[in-house]
Length: 368
Ligand code: UDP
Image 1 (cartoon, helix red, strand yellow):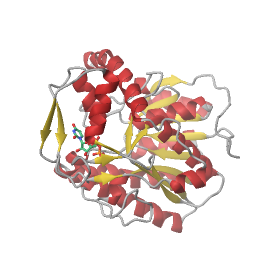
Image 2 (cartoon, rainbow, N blue to C red; image 1 turned 30 degrees about the horizontal axis):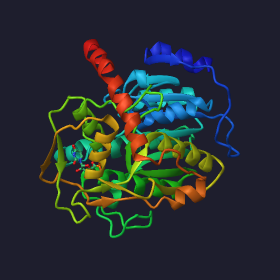
Image 3 (cartoon, helix red, strand yellow; image 1 turned 135 degrees about the horizontal axis):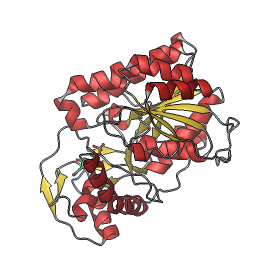
């Protein structure tokens, strides 16, 4: 480790050295529960920071590589943080060569559907080209294990729900298309080289750390639960319901909302599964049932006790009517089972976080 620490301080890239004392205990019990070194791109972001928390609590040695475009230094509760971009292949290779990870978890990506329709090239550059940069660097440094953040958007408008991993991949926006491309690249690479991966297809990730240390903190909130809670806080005048004429029971879209800590557990179990020598795979991450936009709005009002204003508007471009996960593969192969399958709990943790977030956001803005 001396070597890596020297390299990083020389390059003045380390934002933080929070190598906390670890217990070496893990609630995960697979045979690879031994501690590993894990390189995490995008680990300062919403989902990445929850996975860092879970891995850090289990005692793994972590290095987060994040350009902080949407992530935050304060969100990295464990390990070290290097501010870096995947387009900066020199820095990327230097950091990998010094850290020598056993595995990589790759979160860093652009994730907004609407923006991807407006700026497709940015999405293909950041999500596809930068992932190729990462894969090339992994191959160069002999790193064989990857957990990849994919998405339910790969399915587009599925014929049946809950949708299984074998359903056709028909993305309806550049964001989903960029993730399908990378899944294809991973499949080809695993055939050509000693390289294994699990692509986790996330459904609608929501909620926050139950201790309110971390949570969603995007400059612009687009997700339903976050927008509803910010409206309850008075940050927005009203919440728009995008489309009430879908072919669903109440006319609004149905989604499978999964608590971010349950998703974090899925990453750790998928990583153990991979490091136990199992084959590459793709796995859905969701609870298997969904809620309509109207049901989520009602739950947000119930949890907050605030009857915030709601406006029914036109459909939003790129939305699929109903999307829920068949997560049998994840459950059977990794032993995953959810602990927070409760919409009110998800919203309550997000609400506690929202109430704490405003002062943090103000501090961030002051620093700029
Ligand atoms: N939605 C809405 N109002 C909002 C944000 C989202 O009605 O302010 C709807 C959106 O059209 C979709 C569902 O809520 O049907 C979930 O959207 P979100 O952006 O949270 O996640 P997505 O499913 O697009 O990944």
